[in-house]
Image (spheres, helix red, strand yellow):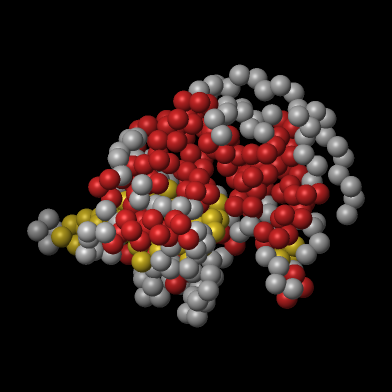
Length: 337
């Protein structure tokens, strides 16, 4: 592989149209603190979910059962005063069970539209790989277009809309792997692991002390933002300044996946777009109104790990997509500050 050329130094960032970086960061910190009262530990997971929310993207969450994925979505919905819906994907789930369908009303002698669970703000698609491709595809239009078509008529969803789909990385019997077209529509793929020992102790104490239920009490999660304020945050995030050299860096990272030894299938242009969108949100979390190369590098794995396919020889060696991306990021030259 040829050595990359060293890019010119970054020019000083110009004032951003959303030059309220600290204000944006303060609002995001309030959301983080509120959700953290219920979702204990795993700060990097919560940050990546917030990045997807700010960037207006969707998230694929991979982790074994019982790690708090549903609790995270419910706590986020409460903190943001957003509607929340959950669909348990099973082999017999039909597309109309997700999007909705028309039913005949004998009284009016006409058909009425019964809207499905996708008509919400935060949708948890639990174990999405348990349903066949036909049902999985019911999410394609709503994730990409923000609308649902029922009986030839389109219905727009009320923003904001964030789909969080989960899948179990261990138990693969009876599952239907997501096709590349649908994987590419997720802004980030977030890996959730077992909590740290101290975090698990706090979690067990919070759930079991004085309560007979096996779920967390969400009443202590304060409401810190409204749906309209979330949309305003998304618009401000989209206006964060990105230097042309930083965009060049993001594109060169994605382009390198297409020729990297051991990667059989690299990321497409949607990967470059996702990387820059997520980097803007990463800058907001850091309290800045401009994107740095570090923002791009920090979010590269969640933005690209589901967009590449490893060659068989790397899979045999037990390497993961993150291993390949780590090596790649070490070789792609970043702009000089």
